[in-house]
Amino acid sequence: MPGTALVRRKRIKDVANRLLWLEDGQFKAMAMMATDPVCGMSVEREKSTTGEWGGRTFHFCSRGCKAEFMVDPETFARAEPPTPAASA
Image: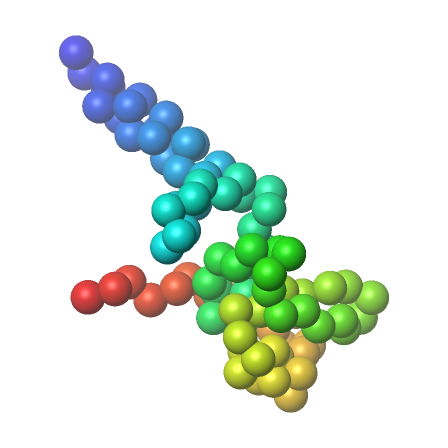
C-alpha cells in the first residue's frame, strides 16, 4: 500500500522525538531534557551544568561548554542549537 511506510516512519519519529535512550538504559521524556546551546547535545535538566544569562537558564553537557558559552553568550543564546555530530 503506497504511503504506508511513510506513515510508519512519521509515527516512529514522533515517538523518538518524545523519548531519548540514555546510557544507563533508562528512557527519559524529552520534557525532562534540554539541549546544550554550544554542542547541541541532549542533557538531563536536573543533572546538567547550568548557567544564567539574560534572565534565562541554559543547560550544558559539561563545564567546558558552559565556559565557551560564557565567553560569548549572545552568539549561542540567539542561534539555533547545533546538530550533534553523527558517530562514525
